[in-house]
Length: 185
Image 1 (cartoon, rainbow, N blue to C red):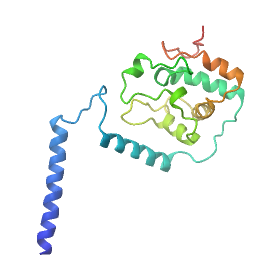
Image 2 (spheres, helix red, strand yellow; image 1 turned 45 degrees about the horizontal axis):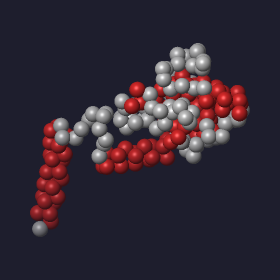
Image 3 (cartoon, helix red, strand yellow; image 1 turned 90 degrees about the vertical axis):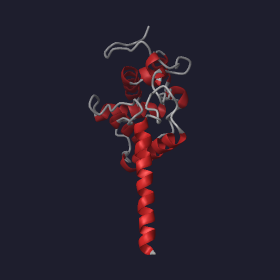
Image 4 (cartoon, rainbow, N blue to C red; image 1 turned 90 degrees about the horizontal axis):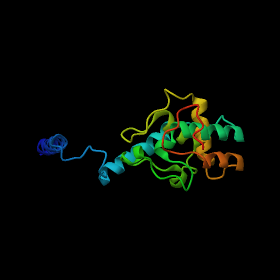
């Protein structure tokens, strides 16, 4: 009796694995970036990201102090590295041609908001990227201090001091502003 149950379980698992394999190789599950993923895919991706952030994102306080100068540096870093996908300040945050071609669409951070995210979560996402979303890892191009500066700006982008807000409102998301240029008219 126990032997029959074990064979039944083994056969069920084998059939399930073969079915999943056949489904994946049939091309029936879309891999293109211009269609909406299914509910299972969205759930798996969201659950995985949440668990990864809970496990690996830094828990310590942001080592970059909250100053106007650091927030201005955050605006500069955002303009040069993030605005092309994540938009710019309210009123001018329509997705760029690059962002329109990504799926899932990158959040337009001025309106979709990340101010309630822990800074450690923003740091981790910027440093390591998010697999299969188009969000690259900036850990190879930005120093940790720069990434923390971006995390600081993101945390406070909805309540910036006037001098920083004035600069933020001038940021454009398209065309891309080369590093070292202001991107302001």
